[in-house]
Image 1 (spheres, rainbow, N blue to C red):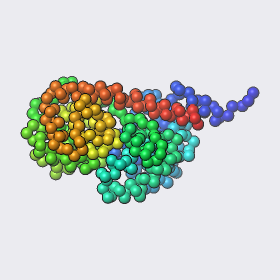
Image 2 (tube, one colour):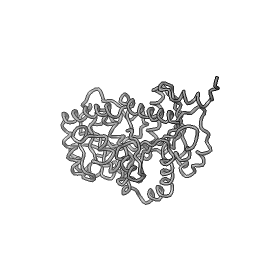
Image 3 (spheres, helix red, strand yellow):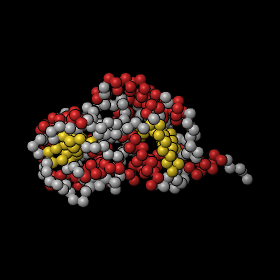
Length: 355
């Protein structure tokens, strides 16, 4: 009788469609949406019966990738899944490598939004790592169609697209559609106070809606909203952990997303899952997550006058309800955890069958 090798046994197990997978998720703690993605992916894989190993590295690791190269692969790992910053340092190991591109820094819509400091940082540090990671990965995933379009034009191959998702059981509408307490229309801005995110348009927007609305501002993962901007009808909210974000949405009537570029519209999606209408600029990731006139009212980029008109239109509670209900439905149907995680698991199993 022929003796079966250890490799053949592992290979036959790895192609099984029901075996739990051990997935290593090495990631850089960057204070960005990629952190949220990695934490949500680890939790979702665990809920789906798999064994994720989430391992964080300091932000400074981007400058010293050899630190990651020296880290041994945890025992029994089937798949390594990381971002393009670290992928090149993890390629060539025993397990297949999946790279998810969260923020394609060569996207034409993103290039004008960068400061000189960002340009130097991207060109000197990140771009070389990103290109090496995308080249050496066994599978590359983009989080949106427009990101995949830019990557295909730049590197010549089109990645798979798996949208990010929202836990619609964690983010859900308040019991009563109409917020209690009365008063002016409450607009909510969530994000880092940068031009890229559109924070600079908030003072002008506030002045245009001062007679009927107030704007609550909640800083992003990297920076709190500056208190110097909290004047007139702009109010600064205290920082909240990710687990407390639903409370911020529950206190709002409308979520304002004036981003000029977005790889994926996390805030817009969370708002939709909470049954809230969105107003914002008709740009990249926001327009891919929202549907103008159905779940959101979108204005051309930098058109603050139109943005204010959309806010005024949403004084109508019936319109808020219609957009909010449609947003909730879209969030569940197209951006559910089950849908996204199953897509990643399919990628994992395809790679294992091909190993």
